[in-house]
Length: 285
Ligand code: C2E
Ligand code: MG
Ligand code: MG
Ligand code: MG
Image (cartoon, rainbow, N blue to C red; front, side, top):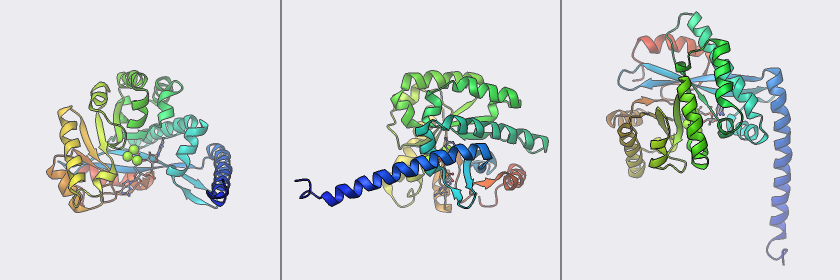
């Protein structure tokens, strides 16, 4: 009977599922409010070019500061935003904010940097992403070349034809395209060849153990070689130690990003780093 097979377990799962549905609904309502009340903020994490040690760009990472609850991680709310469709509005806010930031920093006379923006699968596939982005660029007077769109592999594997067509349009607008978390999806070399991309970011789960795990070292090295053979720039994310950095340098990785160089920071702090990093070799390198 069900009871003999563990009725208690069944009850436990049901309760947990109900609770998570309730929690999800609460987050959904809170997310709407967050947009209306301006509770989102963008942090920026530098990317460094290994050959020169200079700043090569930034990645915008969303933060949700909820009064009384502090920071909520995007890992928690982006999936809910994605499921409920709120990601469209949040994504537009992120891109507008990034474009305004580029304008502000240009006005301040800072060295021009490119900024990478993460796009969720649903943002890419649904709605009129090309039109939305081109409108935002036009309204803010932002050159498309200053924006890199980061997209994970997963979406493109499901809707390869549609994705490739959309990415083509975005490339024609002048935007750069990067594959994020590379190696964790269902990558196929044939797909990579078909997609109009500029760079790949090696997932941090491979980078983490490159100096101790021979398999991760081999995978990372292979991704770098393959990327270069396809004419792509290769970026490593999640670089936390000097040893990892040394490995990546020796194996010809183009750019690195990670806590070793800098954690994601608020715009005001990043503005100071842009000044330092774009004119001199980064102190940690
Ligand atoms: P991601 O795009 O792969 O971003 C990298 C994540 O790794 C960030 O987490 C960053 O803070 C973290 N990270 C960077 N360097 C290191 C390191 O050296 N060690 C470790 N342990 N972590 C490092 P974060 O900011 O929590 O973002 C998590 C994910 O949420 C992002 O992964 C991205 O998929 C998503 N996300 C963030 N902002 C946005 C956004 O504006 N729109 C969308 N659609 N997704 C976003
Ligand atoms: Mg990313
Ligand atoms: Mg990533
Ligand atoms: Mg990731």
